[in-house]
Image (cartoon, rainbow, N blue to C red; front, top):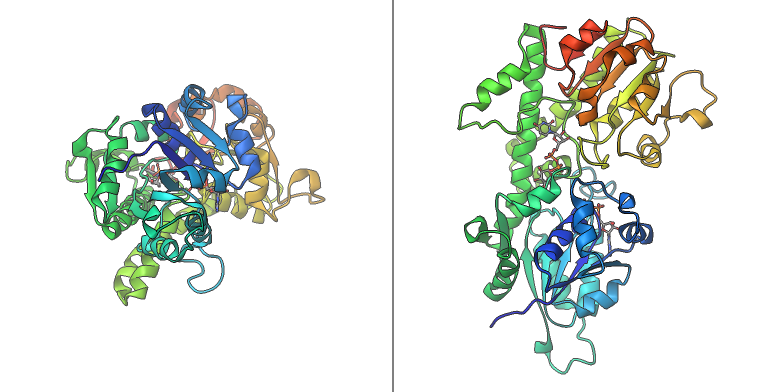
Length: 474
Ligand code: UDX
Ligand code: ADP
């Protein structure tokens, strides 16, 4: 029996739901898509006529939204209504790590998933395909299924058959900053499920722009687990190269050379070998913590410890950077101004979740430094949330140990002793070093954690340079 999909509802208008639905709307003009969210401010931003005010920054997103919004793509807070009308419902809500209770600090908090499933159970009508999009711990589909099966049949439906749900897992592999390209040209699309008609219905949507050989179908659990493991492997690669960056610094080797040399081995491959200040983002840490939780749950403690190390190295890398800055600035940064270039967890996004910049900035403020933070896309209010209790200049009566916000690299650099580059935004590699150094105190340092600086040029302008994993400089 063919399941027709004419109307889609996506619950959650975040970094996953927004861009994913925008691309489906763009590629499937005959499907009507309603993206719903309980956050009114976020929905208002998605509907803002000024496309520079979209709630997330993602290269190429504006153009897609311009084409589809109010054509077959709508954003609203009408959760119930749009659930009722949908043939297919994507769940793209947040699943952060639990902060309290059993599994705190490791397991994912599924309260938003459960709330969504209950709403679907209550308001869904007819035959509805429910698609998990959020990154979830394995076997969450089972939870969604149990909630949907236990939901009450609305009175207006005559028999049980009028209301049925099919659960699919369709993990999202997009990376922020390249989401549009990743969605348009995915390496693969993974669909996990039990019902062939539901799988075919989702597959048909992707076939509008993805070739069939890239669409994999599996059972539900393998699909959920694959997402977790893909992220764990990627994060492990980052921790591996970061661990070697420290060795390069101690042994006069250069991490870029090492990355290039090992990456040319086709078994290793050249991608994801950039050493940096540690991985951030909403997925890597959360997914590894989930993996650790699951392994411990099944008594596979050695495997859990193995993956714990990936996170340990990530934390260590961030602490190490704070120590190096302190050391190079004569062991004292109290009252010294340090310019921070980049606060997002990577370039080309305004997302700061788990950004290494957060812990590095906190570490520097704790040492008494005065930070002047600039990021091309991160807003001051977001930094205020991330640095929480750490004093902000305007409210601060302190003489040292606080932060302020800057609107440009040049503004941030004024009177500073050092520049610390934390995200690899393009504009940081196009800096005019002469102009910058003239605004700074001497000796003027650049600490480059992303290998974006043109070392020769910067040195010529008089900078002292520390560059991550570059043992020839340090
Ligand atoms: C990741 C996965 O790539 C994506 O498939 C999944 O859907 C969600 O999680 P994302 O977190 O958006 O995507 O970004 P990604 O490009 O993977 O980077 C994650 C972190 O690793 C960033 O902090 C980045 O700076 C860091 N990283 C990445 C490195 O330090 N070096 C690298 O070589 C690559
Ligand atoms: P992700 O990176 O996974 O997309 P985000 O936090 O950016 O995560 O987005 C998740 C969105 O889901 C948020 O905007 C949040 O308001 C929304 N959300 C959470 N629970 C519900 C719910 N029950 N109904 C509608 N929207 C929800």
